[in-house]
Image 1 (spheres, rainbow, N blue to C red):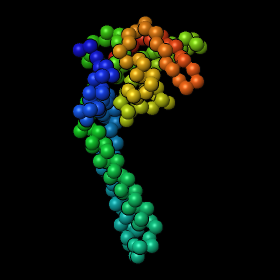
Image 2 (tube, rainbow, N blue to C red; image 1 turned 30 degrees about the vertical axis):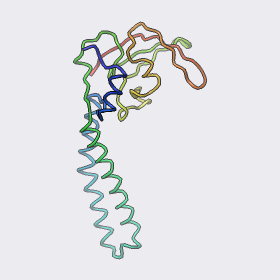
Image 3 (tube, rainbow, N blue to C red; image 1 turned 45 degrees about the vertical axis):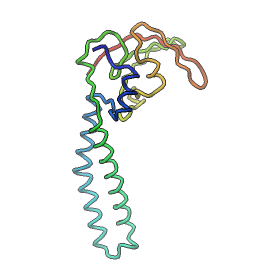
Image 4 (cartoon, rainbow, N blue to C red; image 1 turned 60 degrees about the vertical axis):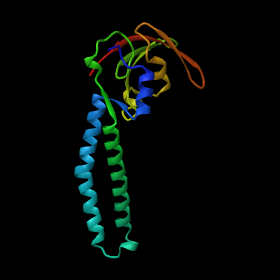
Length: 173
């Protein structure tokens, strides 16, 4: 298997499939378990306590807890939908050909300031720039996908063009 290209992800999106790493799938499952367990229990407890205060029409605690319950249930539905549509991709099981694909970890050399930066390409729900996890839909990621270790790419931002060299491509768990 040669890897996933951007075209594959467009096809997944049309079919309703959502790419996610194995780590991202586990994070969603953990969050769902927490929300459906302890969080749901705590909100139900707050609603019951607020009901005990009497007149619900002017009970701010009750209305706040009900609103929180609605938000929690919306998040639970969202996660369930994402998991049911997930296309879990474990790149560590693929042969590393040096090609940048979904789930790969890429070390880039910024040719303007001679500094290296390392990013993991992940699904939209997993993206976190502070943890150096880039969404498959990010402009930098779109420029990287399909290129190989040693290739040079140019990414256009609003203020400049940035030239990168793909120093290393890893298929890590």
